[in-house]
Image (cartoon, rainbow, N blue to C red):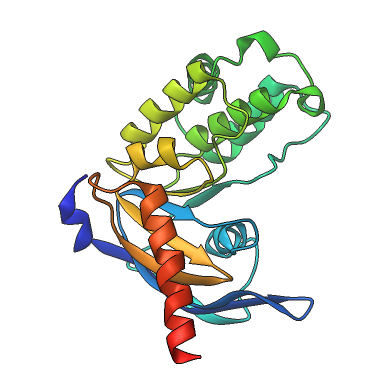
Length: 237
């Protein structure tokens, strides 16, 4: 991990709140994240990870609070579940993304993305007929074509076979040199290999956030954060 990340902040989450059907999904979210590297969001289902990614991406609008960037940044979200035009083929879907985001040699970049993510076997298959594994590959190929500064990934390793998981890790290690990769995941043992920053969410709050040291596992960080949170509430309750 590059410890310079601790001082190179670029994104400030300032008291973000989001409510749905009377339930607080994000509750006064406050944090600062680094400009490059991998930020991993840990938390159980319902902790608010996906909603936070949606708010950062601009898909959902916070009820209050603000997201502050030091400068203008492009953002691209890989959602869970993956979303495509169902009656486009894989190749057509990637061409569509390239038309929006790629200015130089779009055909070559689509071909490269298909090669990297091993999509040639399903190039002419409708996206609605893809297996989970190939849907993840197509989502990641779209992410790569976006060339965004901030890459937002929601459970990207779901359904990955070992070969593609290896490709994914290689790509993330490349992306994080120049981009901010913000990833929500349950697959702790793989994510901790990639992480520079770890964030623990619980019941719509961020209860721990710091630079990641390989000396302690994600599982230990997560469990201690939850234990400390409950202990604090018991003492103050």
